[in-house]
Amino acid sequence: MKGRMKTISAGWRMAYISKSDIKECIFCARRRSRKDRANFVVLRGEHALVLMNRYPYTTGHLMVAPYRHVGSLAALTREEACEVIDLVAVCETLLAEAMRPDGFNIGINMGKCAGAGVPGHVHVHIVPRWNGDTNFMPVVSETKVLPETLTDTYRKVTAALARLPERRRR
Image (tube, rainbow, N blue to C red; front, side, top):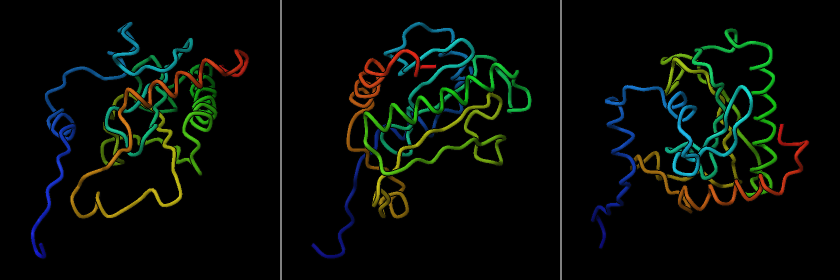
């Protein structure tokens, strides 16, 4: 049928769009909670944690955040900064094993104007990328198509973590 608009449901978007009513920092809440599987927390270090992004840019999108609620890299202690970077490297290894991406985007958005979704708590995004993984959907319909559920991705990433030698986990 030529000229007929098609509709694709992206039910998860409403939670993201309406998140302005969230009163608590997501990273601080995850730090205190021990429901790691339910919160998609992949790994806890001494000063920082790794968790999956509930609103990922692509499948496997991880974040590393220090436990302490600080808004910039400059505010981190040397120990915190070193562990954050070490955990970013662990994430790269985990995602390479679990997802087999062709590359990565790794970045930090500091401040609301820079795109930080949680501007008061510095965190690093590790986004796996594949050749040809972009398409017209986000541009035309403001919809992302993810090929698997967060739960399935969590299982893959934590399975890769279990296979990682202990010395490489930190």
